[in-house]
Image 1 (spheres, helix red, strand yellow):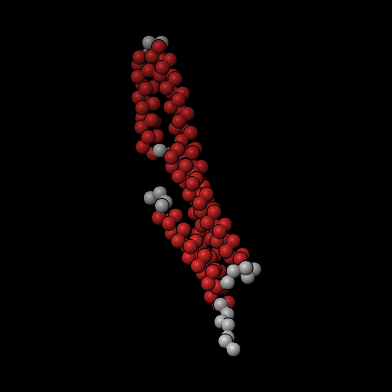
Image 2: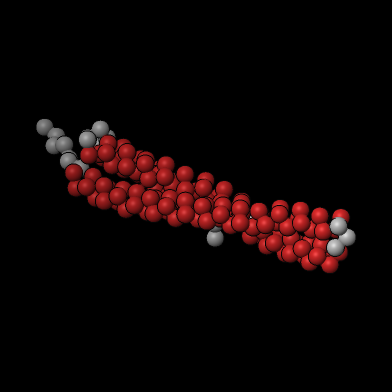
Length: 146
């Protein structure tokens, strides 16, 4: 009779690692969500004044108030330059995409943990799936904005 080795110890250790990666994924999800909302706010706060000031500059030019039109045009150019340099709209989209991916990853780590706890998956499969998820986490971490 061949003894079947129990992998309880390995599975418990794996659950601890899964919890760590799930917590890290949730933390990164929350941070990227905040960064996305902040960049979106910056994008709007820079874009609205540019639109309004551009209209004022145009009206001033038609009203032959060249000094006012020139000053407003310079302010518009500066704000536009800052917006082009910072690209808050694009940064918001990137952070949102990353937050969604980290949220999905956290969910997958949680599902793996639940499958182990309910004995729906055993040692070799759980370990293999963890390695896949860990690889996705590493790839995602490397793709983050510097």
